[in-house]
Length: 272
Image (cartoon, rainbow, N blue to C red):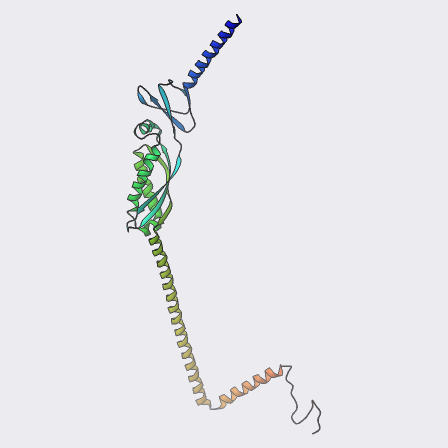
């Protein structure tokens, strides 16, 4: 009797395990920000897109393919040429996500790795097309215009594959070694030209100052000559008296100068 009970319990446990396994294989979860596409072994990919939550399927017959529908970043480096045939290294940063309603078509025509198959090719195509419209100088001075044009063209191109681009930005823009060296040489030449112009302007100003000073000296000499011709030697005698007065004043303020009366030996008191 006990053996039959144990056998019954074992069969019931085995049956329960089988049922649990079947039920577990018939359930699948779709996480937040994800969507699922159902592949049926008899009918192929279903057109219905399954949303978030726990769902049922037919074990072995149906299989869920989970897609991440959140915006994801991707950096794509591209080497291309400008309008004036300069090599340009550009890195484009893209925030992309699939169009939810087009997930069955994306899975059928492109596959789960749609971003690897689509984004590098269309990004290279659009960048080469847009950059070829600008020369190297315009790529620097009109970078905002270039970025906007790339964003518009790339968004339109990606929409044909069922992709939405939330943001497109140029994060890196450099030129070839030859162009960089040419720019540096041009800047040095401009600085040297500015320095030479400054030296020339300085010399011109000094020349003008010398001319003005010489004209002033000539005018002063002319005035003195006229004064001497009019007043005679009286002006010279007056200047001598003024100079002697100034010298006497400066000597009187000096502690190292002592005045002695004429004809007396006051300091040593020597006999006459």
